[in-house]
Image (cartoon, rainbow, N blue to C red):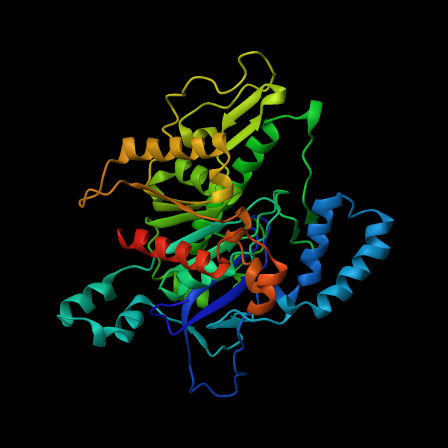
Length: 431
């Protein structure tokens, strides 16, 4: 985790009627002269240390039984006791400070670091001094909106989001509540578990098509809420639940150059959001994306989401020629510069990787090259990696122990994260 920002502030925002929960990462400083204010503490990997909460969600994903007596009276107490001894409950994210307050009247020693301050922190290393520094001060802060994978949460890519914030970006990690997360808190105090989709003879591709559209709509609403003051809920305003630092951040965000990002199902979500409203997005960072649905046993197979490929929705009734209909002229497909980083595991799935290459090819065909002759769709594969290498799993245990407990392919898991971050940083520097 390297970069210009002195620290990375993390603010966990609960969901409201229209907005899902967000974990917000931003460049920050600590006001060491502040009086009568508690010293800020580093942020943990999980909101409020809720390891047991998420373990119960993962258990439901595995056995689909959160409402059973076994889950309620045996599994839930066991997972709570287990969470008390797991290192993930106590480990902290390096270089971060946690903002706890959700009350606008509460003071905090943690302050947002705007682009002008970040420019001053490395001004001594700039050659030519004044002009370069003045240009950096004028630059608006870039917003990255991140979507998690299927059965995941808005907390499982915290290292990646922290690293981007350390480099000067504001990052909003969404915890989707469309039924694709293992478990997510709802505004009324209840929680929503992962929604298992019908399989076999009952399979219907519309389930995923409707779900990814719902995720993309959450994604786009979060973009709007983050950059536009007053974009609140129907009912009590969102401002009641936010920290004053958000107003400071909003003043500096570049509302027309948002970076869409996501992992797995989140990559598909980000691609659809950027397809639906391309004018809002500068580029996309798509990590091990799920870009193909293959249920050929039911005669259903299509690139996903079809809108990103410039295609109409697939037929829902199985037939000899089932698949995707002819291109819909009203759908242009994903048309923003994009970085694709893939695991060796997903690279080995011929149809899935073929869809990823097709999506990249469409972007290159429509966007061309930059001024240096580089293609607008950049692709990388991490040798020896699995799909899970893109999450924080390896950081949830001390390093010596993690290597023995988690076997994530043949690659060094820490070096894999480093490569993902370096490719991301170099790609973003192009824009």
